[in-house]
Image 1 (tube, rainbow, N blue to C red):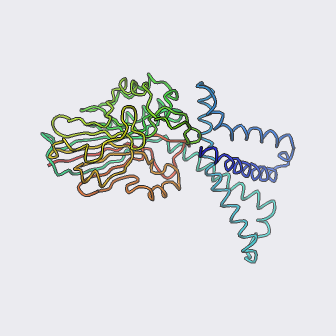
Image 2 (image 1 turned 45 degrees about the vertical axis):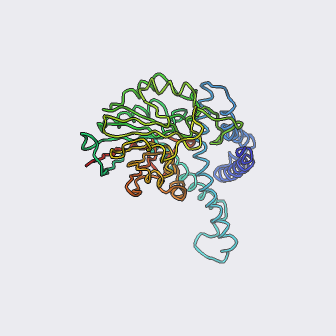
Image 3 (image 1 turned 90 degrees about the vertical axis):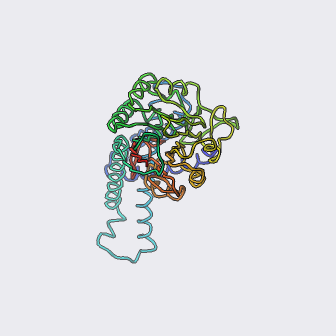
Length: 400
């Protein structure tokens, strides 16, 4: 319903951008003053503007994939267009009215055609540069290393090399090419254990580029103790429109095909349960807080998940969202490994996200517990990262 209420705002913003853009290019060259040229540009612009709705309504097909990709790129470009053009217009208005008595060289030119052309070129360069950088940056998966000490004995283990990944968002944005790069990065760390902290899928199983090939790529992850995962809030079967979900009050669940895909990929899914690995440490996989998934009405509390564990051994938890840190620390958890936040994904989101979570991204010590939140491998919505990075986390854990 939120998307419906925001639709008029979206359309008004798009009209504003169109009018400002037409005014700028008409100043640049007389050819753009031709009514048919303007109509042609307007039609192309409308197609892009409504690509979000077209992709939502189109049946699963190559056309839908194209429209999804187009709309995801468009959302990122639109965001920075609004910011750049909006700031430019506000500054010009301030100089034209409240600061009209402020004299500086070129003031007269600024409010004429020359000023419009120059400001438009500057805005276009900024928008283009940031957008291209965002796309390239999103495709470059980096490795972030952590070194932590857990004051417990872990059987015969002195240390454990854990690779944390999250937010793959396999679907329209993320496919085989990115997974091949990710697996190569993981294997280069020679991990003992690989954990996936949710949002493996991007809401639609049908969005997978090539399920069999993707599963084959993920089976290539080399890990002594295997690959374990929990589900996140996007590991459910539902259609989304510009990041907003639709549907009734029925419970949202993962598709059976999603579960089968993980089996084929050699990934063990933990549904509010734990495994004791090599009689040395516990690994618990928590379902998502708001969308616990099929067969789970309400996930176990922090105290419940450690109730029947031998807390003299290290307890590692994978949880999609980095919440309940104090509760987990009080329950005896030694490491809480999460994703979900994307570190904001796009500037200025990387700044505002810190207001929403105690540990929005990176490392935090909570009592005796280590909280590590990854910015994730994949993307949600705009196919860009600005001010953040796609990453895997290589965590070296040392024991007594």
